[in-house]
Length: 243
Image (cartoon, rainbow, N blue to C red; front, side, top):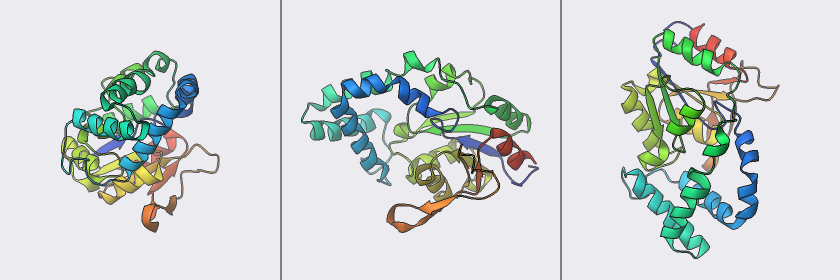
């Protein structure tokens, strides 16, 4: 592979906040948050706990349904409600609620051209998101771009657990060092992919993110989390990968 990353065979992406500005979706979902604040607070707390677990809730790879059952059980305990009722409410308020509003969401500039150039250069493309990505990818008009679509929920563990990144590596049929993972979170995307042995890139839309210096911060436990490349415009990512 030409460019700054010799030996690169695949580029994989996070979705929400990486391919499109997720604040736009949050703004459209604000009414649901205001109507059901206790539910969304419990969901956020449980997801925070699940993000901190390195292994799937069952101790091994589990089906997506089992993950959702564990999540519903944890939320049910927090809310004092039947987990089956919580699971149905999560499906309605979280996993399906956004669809009617998502058609108005727009990609970051130059995303589609970047994906086309990467495919034209012979790179495999993958997508690994904390939430199920297939419907969102379709509504964003990105059908056919990705060789692999994965949800960390379907692997049974959320980022930065090594479990979803191992599943991504296997699905792409590449070694970890042959994959560049692109995300918007140091703590979840860069930390998880970097620990799995992947190269990492981080999108930061701040005008201070020039694309020419790595980002780093302290993660859980005080360890240093570092991204190999930081960019604010997808044209910078193209230049970094393709030269």
